[in-house]
Image (cartoon, rainbow, N blue to C red; front, side, top):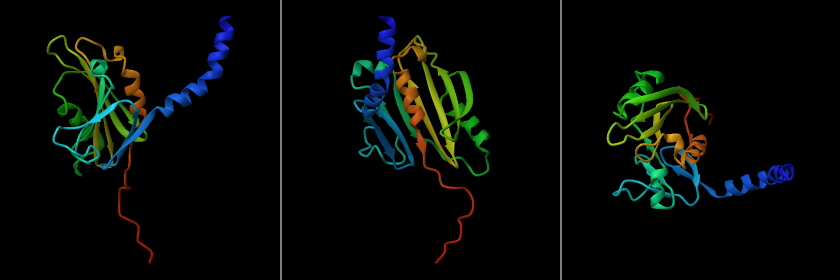
Length: 187
């Protein structure tokens, strides 16, 4: 019986993955980034921002039911551009130190869809403390923070929406223009 259930799961898995993928949408921002998110999640920004696709606003992605906010939500923010006199490594080291003043408990340098990234885990020391994770991404001079946080007293991996965040993070893309002089136009 167990082997029959395993076979049935195997055969239905591609259909289920396709069905789950169909429940996702793509959000694009005029700052040059896009991300996939669950179709039933809510998108918002600051209260005075009428256009969540505007390039200089942060964008919140919330679960569909307010009581599930404690299980984690995601924010994407276009940060200040990298100064020309700083290397990408220097800039990301500064950003991770100044973007959140909470104590860092873990960090890892990596790439995200071929852009240089720095993943940093913070712990808010107030109350029972909660963890948040920020992934700082840089492409040419464009710098973004993709962050995820949830309720007090929880490790971030224990939050029900953490796997959704990780999937969303894997779909984050930035449109970068090539660095250097533009090629001559042929007329």
